[in-house]
Length: 384
Image (cartoon, rainbow, N blue to C red; front, side):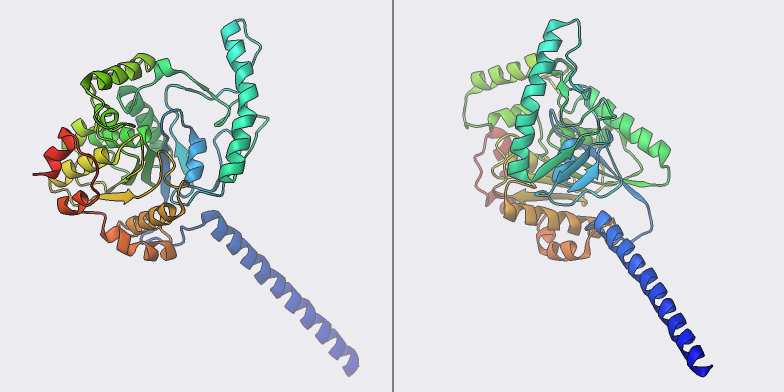
């Protein structure tokens, strides 16, 4: 009887051990998956729920957020994976759809022969571009056959486009208001690149959004004429620059050559929302000179929450994926920025970015050391 009871107790003990072991293993796996899903964002200094609102550059969709968030499901249901990027945008997120975008998938069944031709061309070109991205950037997209929209295989109408002006600001405000209404208690972090960065800057200046707690402005510019002045070749001459500006205005039906531009909104920016302006010495499109000019205008007004991160080798708009050293500098500095302003961040990344973040408020003398070509607009600020 004692032997039978011993066997029973041993068996019962084994079942209990296996049961508890299975429970703790499952819990561990759940926590691991949870940690993976949140990736770098393992720390926060307050208990506020945070949403990220992303504004893409020209001809960009939510797809381009993959440079900043390695894996996510787009609003179209497509699964995006972009492993070569970094992780500075967390979950959950929402993205702005600007007026010139048509996310409907190609459909050649149309009475308009021109539309049918374009759609057929898109069907042919799309796989080529997708394969190029897959090979170069470790990029993958899984289609959602149940949706008639796509953030990668989409149409674009230049006639509806503008550059961070009235219609873009309205599109961003619409997305922000929808997010604010649906999640009234959540804090919001704005993240934009190029045209999206300019739109965010102008939106903050004009709308003063109360739920926004920080903004990262990647490839920010001061105004389009200044971008043109430093685009490709310096000292092109006023006539050539005017012609280039006319071409931009001709193709973009809703773009106003006279502005307003971010530099004109700088006077309306206050110190309520921390700003991290990001640029690169080799950007090639939205020049570092423009971002520096915008930064100095804000700092000259004694704003304390304005920061400038200058990368060395990354091209526009590939700050996060073009150069490994720049990616490291970018990612760690952004997390240090998040930590400084009590937003969700990764402890390891933020720790690695402390020194670089400490240099994000450079003086005029420190900016001069970059020895960038200067036009009259640049030298006026740098030689005060």
